[in-house]
Length: 248
Length: 343
Ligand SMILES: Nc1ncnc2c1ncn2[C@@H]1O[C@H](COP(=O)(O)OP(=O)(O)O)[C@@H](O)[C@H]1O
Ligand SMILES: [Mg+2]
Image (cartoon, rainbow over the protein chains, first blue to last red):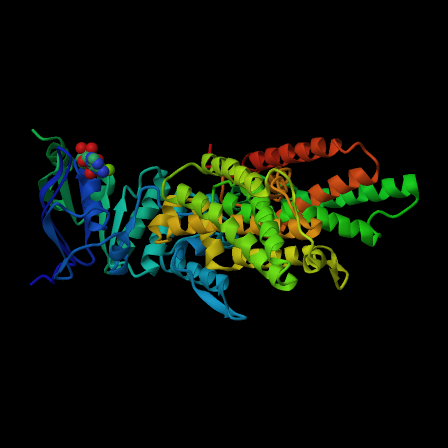
């Protein structure tokens, strides 16, 4: 008997004007599972993750989170219940350091003569700790520099570390390996597998079939807003996935 | 081999001494200016320039107005905005304070001062709120919104003043503008209090942190749950509040309000912020930097008067310093190997 899924989507539909961005899409995701979302441009991948992360309400269909029906009010609501989303542009403040980015919007403070003062020492210490648990190697002195001085993979790790620190149970990533060099892509894939081992559910969009086959437990293919198919990597190959993506 | 590669990567291929120079140049420049005027003064007049209390007080008074306007401006610029209206908001506050005190001084001079101060701050909040609302809610570009307010505040100031200055004869007001506390002119003491409060807020509070975050990546700030609209509104109200305090000090120092009080100070205030290391693209800047910037401008202005150079050279000198400081900011990325998103 498999455990209850952390997320279940039933017949999600979303229209923008006359465009059916998403039609009757079902999705199931368990803890410790990695689900890849594949599809051509305009297939509805971003729309699907935006519904799950609280950006768009669905026109039709329902979300169930940990077995209960979920009506997301906004992205903040999604984050509060453990659904963290890492967008392609990472949403880091490039001029702030690692600790400030991990805590952005939720900074710890210490009382100082009755005033609330940022607890920078704590932010820095936690940032070290979080990136250590993810086994990320960032030189010590870079922790006090703006994150714009970090490499693309390190920045991706900061975004992931931030999600983990805030107890993400479902992590959504839009193209996490795009715009990275090959060694850094490998690092990010390792990170995804480490999150899986920590029982986090991961949903990621990718255009890269090699990455998808490397880390995904299941692949959900969208084509023009419709679920074209769902496969396990062991049961399929690149050719079939491409065929599902483009049809025919 | 690997270690060498790592060091090069970490330093961005840049010499540490160069990095130090880029960061510290405003301090070095201020020291250089002081050394220059000190030597000139000794060589030409046989007197000290900086060892003279009167000179120091004059420099502090010269610095006070650009500094006050520059404090709020620092927050606004760090968040990626600009406030062009502060000069005339200062004038408007000065005029309204003077008018209120004209009417109330015959009743009770001390009460009149209290009411005048309240009126100066309160009236400044109006354009501040309108600027903030235009920019945060109605998405008007800061340059345009505050330029519009520049005109509105200017017109309103002259209308309320009846086209001239508004004199006030009130001993309390005069004392506030001209007395000293432990040898420090009261206007300078007030300015220093505001400097400390603004420095603390920017460097130590969540509010300051959010100001940097918004300037660094507005979308990241929004997605982190920071209320960017409300924050932006508050930034322009803080900027206007600083202008209100400056207007209040102006009226106190000259026992009169004038709509054009802040007209020449707008440029100096932005100059102070930029010289102090803030980037006009947003995301960086400090109150300490703005303080140094305002002192540099004041030393140039007072120093040139002191050594008897034609006063118009001040404008040329300050203008050159502004351009040079922006050039240094532009070259920062290239020299330090930092990635610049604005490019
Ligand atoms: N906010 C929006 N407004 C209007 N149309 C949209 C919006 N978002 C997506 N669409 C449309 O919905 C379809 C699916 O888009 P999207 O989910 O971004 O696809 P993908 O991420 O797979 O490339 C496209 O035709 C796109 O133009
Ligand atoms: Mg997309």
